Image (tube, rainbow, N blue to C red; front, side):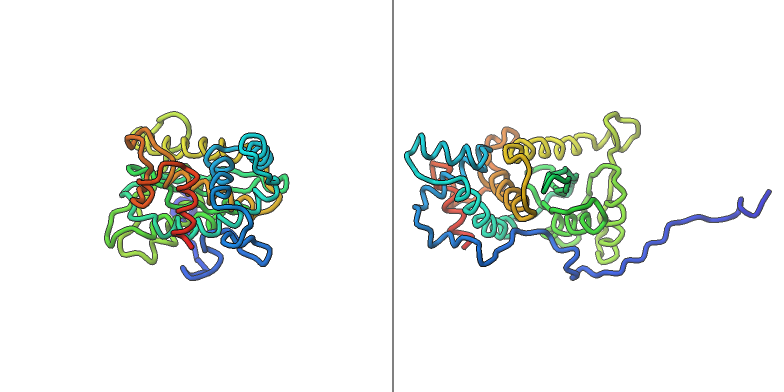
Length: 288
């Protein structure tokens, strides 16, 4: 026997931040002096709706969107105008996404996926509700560290009811463990964490909760299909803008087969509108 046999090892974490720190604020599209004022553009709202429909909902590149508008609809618009309008629309859509997110389910799944900005990998942290399939958080970060995980989970559970039992399903990224330790310090109703590791069910938790991990994996694949035509981004704001617009499309416009071909979050004002371009325009009007 040696003294080391009786040594107790444990991990101690001390957090030098609070819930109000800007370091853990959810990412959002920027609005600068160069941002286009969508309510003073020379083109019609119909054209704006068509741009968002092709560029976001149908996942075309900005150049192909401009080409289609010229060749099919005889609308003269440049690919740079497409990008400018998308960035301006994202500012309002982000506010719309947060305002109309609604309550969340008891079980949510989270994961991060990479996105290319200036030739380097950056990350989008997604969280999605298990039943209504609504995206509840979409945080952009340069790293996969605990600060990014805190920001994403903080937003994901923001609309949870008092004392609602929340379970978060993630992979084995230790950032989620550190994030939940921090958030649970401030919560009366603790968030439960389940890890689903690897591609095979080698433990009881992975077997029981694998289906929730598959939900977030399918979301990541859908997201990749929408951002792949952009072939990377030249700025953080461009990546955040398209991600924000994707979430608006996914939550409020995209029909889901598991939901009887209804979007995860139904807005009754949009039910009476037949075309997707008109729905985009109305979302912007409601967000203004």
